[in-house]
Length: 492
Image (cartoon, rainbow, N blue to C red):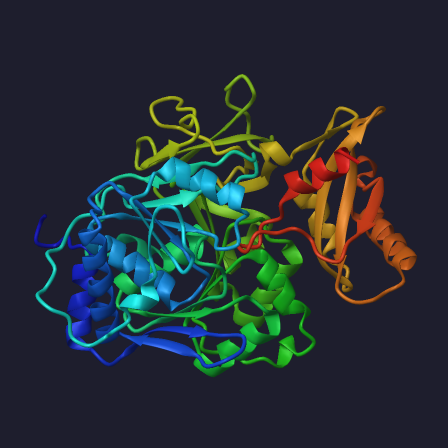
């Protein structure tokens, strides 16, 4: 280990020695008392759990699932796993048993951190919450791989994405926190679930930077705005669904978001109206979008002011080369949709899969996670959709995100998902599944949505059918489970 590179545990322990009583983690519960953890408490609590993991045989290379709801204990567990030299593996506490056991079978863990009992040895972090001073200091172990994330895809097959390399960080020149514009003393508010890569990795990097983290038990738009006003975070980490729901709040214009220096949104395409609403409220320099995958095979960033000049773009590559290729892996000209291949730092991505074949590797390191898009003449990237979500209807390509962006403009729509259903004539027909915001005559709403689509879309992109549902199936990170919607309806 060089003098400048340190483990996450070493960095946080040093910060705890400087500011032991500073509140580091806060979880605002939807009911009941708010829970907090100080820097000193984090050090002692994570030392206790790390010792337990070591006593249970955890060694470098071991994947340790964190099966908890979003709470302070989730991040406490992650830090403890790093201290023990293991690899944290966040999983949703709401996964159906079959999906959860599929991931556990892939990981083959010695230990699972959970409040539930498993066949494998289970550690409940609440049992180690005596935050009084611990015994002798732990030696700092280096985790490798760095983290393991369940795939955000919807193929139905369990898959883990391992971030390879040594979990060592430079607190004097922290690359990711600086890229994210994190500053020492920042308070980052992550309304999303910690099993998702964005909130999880952003939160840990905020801790590395010397900042603090605010979580909530479960996202609710009105509650989210209340917490921003009460705690005055400087950094927000959102997904477009959250933005849309916040903008739908009747008192949005009166809400005070002055404390927010930077808002990051990622993980899904953002409708233009939602982006414009946040830019109008905060200013373009404070609204930033990041396009990347858990595989870390490429990265683009764009702020709101740039976006206004290149509407719809996700930005230019940051240390990233971008190619747009056709099905034969031949380059396409600017403005033509194809599959996005990227290469970051001049080589293949720092990732491996468990449960899946490796990414297709072209031209010494260019890889794709299946996103479709195009480049403009200035080098800005635009997303079309995921290859697996593309609808081919009557020989024409239709991107669900484009149709969803139109439908969600309607003031009585909370969410919408567009899928292609089997059709004897067209192959696939465009079907919109809509979650209304409030009670409204269904026939009136569907007629208004069709009129809206006809005004803004080519005829073949207009939904042939519209269905209203009480709740759309989304994971806790806000991503629509389109494959589930499509398959359920095809089977009917």
